Length: 116
Image (cartoon, rainbow, N blue to C red; front, side, top):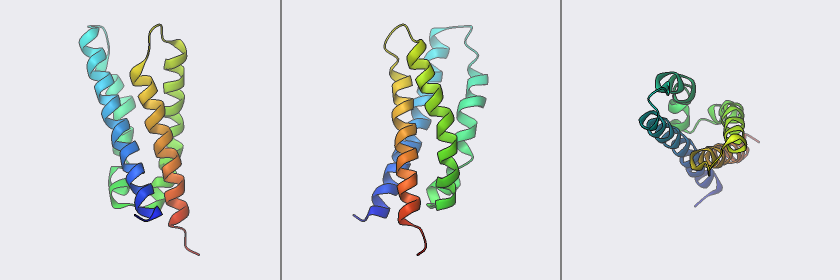
């Protein structure tokens, strides 16, 4: 397995892991609390992740570049949730894990695809 293939696979794992864990988080919170505004969290949390879907699937380095900036938001949100939680926040830790994985693997994917 080449470095390019490995970093692309890790980027896809981070992207879809983040997308699925956020979706599961929103669904479980909506079921647990009737006053939880699930639609607003879907619009704020999930919809921005759908914009780079085509470029991530196509393996475009530029998409990986600007997705790195998006991951700062998700990482910060996860850290804030971990800090403010009363119990163990599994979904917040998953958000931190997958956003960090996507950020780092995206950087290396860009590096291995750079034109010399």
